[in-house]
Length: 428
Image (cartoon, rainbow, N blue to C red; front, top):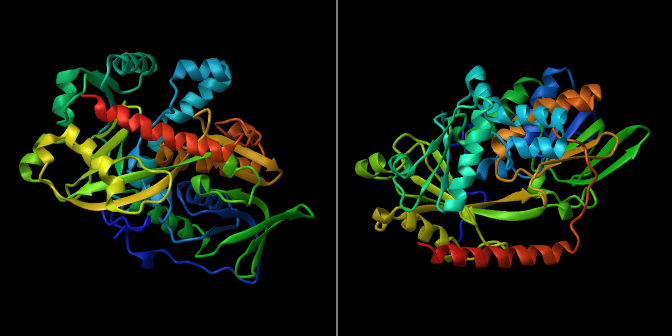
């Protein structure tokens, strides 16, 4: 039996009864409608409500049933690009503002958990970017140089260091970013929802938005049940799960499936040998593998899966092979859980902020760093919605640019992933 994409028993979900959902009435009038109850939507809703706005959140499924509840729980600051590249791309002033924002995205998550006393398992003990080639090691050295020059708490790791910290085989070294950490992502998104409700936000689940139209300076949001909501501003916080509500948005993103497996609980000896200090790891392979330990002592490992939905347990076999390549001693351990979710990648590997019409906003493209990024951007979006000051946004507002031949591009990505996975499997 293939597990549901929404079945993720590794992550504990707080008591659902603590989140009071409020079905949408026949016609509501609010300041802000947010479509999607993930990290971005709920973080923005919380910040907006605390600024005095009347906020309605509409979620098509249940809270945590999208990427926010299905991800690997790695809270990583920064972006895919290093500081000097960002300054070259955006200029000194905008580049520095973006670097400052990106460097603090993990703070946004851990400060919220600690400051609000959220019921979320978490450990802020760093993230390791593991290098398996000399080229990747050179990249780690350059990244370390640039962030250390800015005072970040980062360290370059040699082969001995990384072997001790991960227990894995095959790495030449890597880079440790102590600003990062791990959380229970499902618990975090549920606690964000509870916090937002306590601030006055009304959340409806199982409600599909079927249409958006602007009239007389306000937006009308139509729902599948026949209800409608009128609002000055709409935030489409659907990211990789975006459909046809906004023309061209889904076609501007490359949706990828991220598959994960979790082992049975590790033995005491295995616990001491594998990630003994609890860091999360992402490696440098063409199709990267990422892993961590769960709060109950399982190894949780993920990576890119097939572009279509899985049909059998064999669709997760590449992850089990990767696990055994890294940890040969786990040859006899059973795989207890398998699941998958969707992530969105942009062609330039940067998050995109769009406002195709006044009062219609969206942010898409996390590139695998959505926990910190989407949590941190919420207060910025709320400030922009209230004030109209674009300086509040860390990224420039850009037009939606659909990817030419989008369907063919997805087929090409799938073929590339399969080819790279083959090459990675041949490497020792």
